[in-house]
Length: 121
Image (cartoon, rainbow, N blue to C red; front, side, top):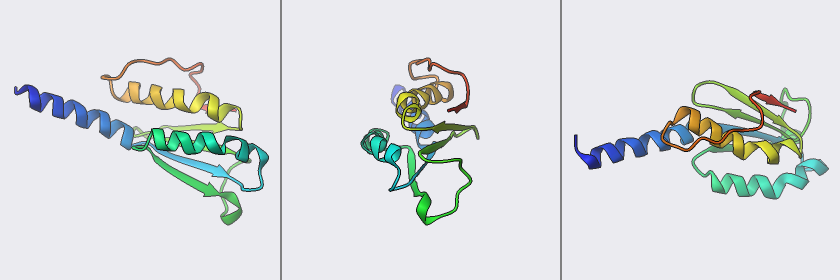
């Protein structure tokens, strides 16, 4: 098989794994915890520009969440990871993104998160 073709296929696999992820971030403009992590959320959405980030203002809709900030990450294999709070979202989100891409794409390096749970509070 042509080396260029193999490299192209591997590249598509990596891009496909990352772009299949969807993140719904629920926030309120009046929430102090949401304001605290707003710079982090903006930075990470630019860093992972292949991930679909949806910023959902809870004052403009009805959502079935306990409070803000809440983040729901939907993976390409139909798993949902929920992170809650201004401490846990910045602490675990990037690690979860890296771990998911490792599990779904064996070409990336393994990064072990501090938890195996898909619900972190």
